[in-house]
Structures are given as C-alpha cells and as structure tokens.
Length: 216
Image (cartoon, rainbow, N blue to C red; front, top):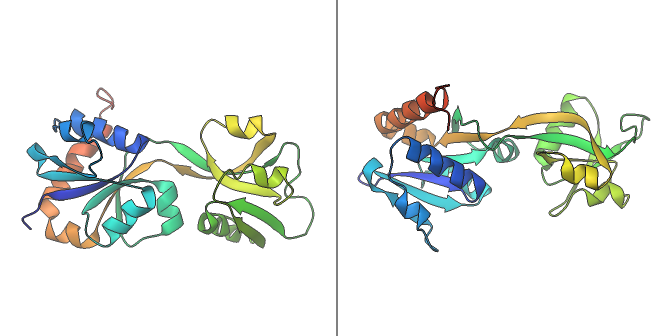
C-alpha cells in the first residue's frame, strides 16, 4: 500500500493521551496539535495519518479497513463487539462499568424481573446473563442516573470513574461489571498486509508502556 498507516483516535481525552504516547516515542504530532477543524492529520516522520472520530466510529472505520489501527475504550469494544484484533491495553483512560442503584436499596432482594437503565444494552445483557438473571433493559441516551430516581428502573449499568456523580444523586455502586481502559485495535486484513509496519509500532508502544522507569 502506498498510503500512510491510518490510526483512528477517539476524540477528546483518549486522543490527547494517545498523542502524548506517540510523542514520547519520538513522533512529530505538530499537525494534530494544530488541527483546527481538520479530521485527517499527518505524522510525516512515522508514515502515519491520524483520523479523529467518535468512539463507535473508530471501531467502524477499523473494522471496514479504511483505518488500519485505532485507539478506543474497552467500553465501546464490549458494546459493539466488532471483527478486529485488540492488540494492547494502553493503560490510560481507566474506569469501570458498574451496576448502581439508590443508596441502601437491596437490589438483589425479591424475585421479580429487574429493570435496568443503560447506554450499554449489550454489556448489560451479557452481565446479567452470566448471573442467570432475566432483566428488562431500557436504553437511555443522556444521564442514566435519573432513571432510578424517577422510578423508571431498579438500577443502572454505567461507566464510573470517581463515583462522585452517583453520590451527588443519591446512588451507590452495587457491583463492578468490568474494568475499562484504552485499547489499541487493528484491522485483521491490515495486520496481514502491513504486518512489519504495524508490529514495529506495536513493539515500540509495548516497550514504552511496560517500562517502569519511563511511564507515559
């Protein structure tokens, strides 16, 4: 292939953390810092292009091969379950999926079917299936914390970082569902066609994040 290796980055914090990682490997990310409204940006000394996208679109672009690699949160990977390889846990963007409900509410008491509000129905369904529990899932796009407060749901499954938002709304974690962090993913065809280039970059990344004397 003649074109540079394309790496799709999740806009926002993961983008900034990934750029910091690439710069620590010696790559010139000036174009990304000075992006303006541009969404495809060159890293000329690495024969790479950065593509900025929303998390779900990062997976779509990598899965369809228009981007060779991507950086996305494990939360999006778990929800979308795309056909791609997850190569490296990058270690940043750490948080967790958790089941939460109103403070002091005995969530697991009783035998009725529970109603769960979430932005992540697939993650939620899989979690309760592992427990052998039937649940009704309500998809919420905005602040899921509202659902138990308004009586719409018995609990929520959502991403928790510090837990401050839950506490401020009178909610508490009942159980952790899964740990989350940023992952480096790759298109399966790209891994075959550009194996040497991709493996060389992955090796550099792994050496950097595994070096205790030089953490990013």
